[in-house]
Image (cartoon, rainbow, N blue to C red):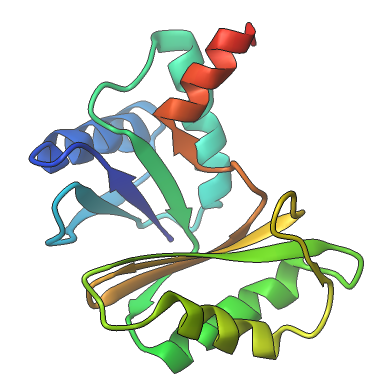
Length: 178
């Protein structure tokens, strides 16, 4: 279990430090930082066997009480962090989908890739071929199969939409008066 942390270019260390402080020092989870070698991205591995989605909810609660994070633009929970390999990506995505998505649920596949030769459509097609239950809904799905490819590492999650921590999303909520 890990977190993909995005920041402005050249602020990766600041964002990683800020996320480490909140997740490790404030919330009390054991973590280990990893370098992504991609500008604007960092990875924080969660050492504790903890639900990464619960940690995201706790980060949102923390920012509501203490104020926004400065360097972190987005924190995406990654249930699995694997070497970039299409068969392994498909295997992990399908196994997580089997745990959460029922035949009555809707889902979509969301792929973000950086510095890789894999094609987005290729990844989506291979995963969709294996998931023959539920219904695809690209506008408002119950679940999102999230694939984050960063060079030789790939993060895979199956989650409810908008379960990531996003500075833009929080600002939208604040403007609505939540």
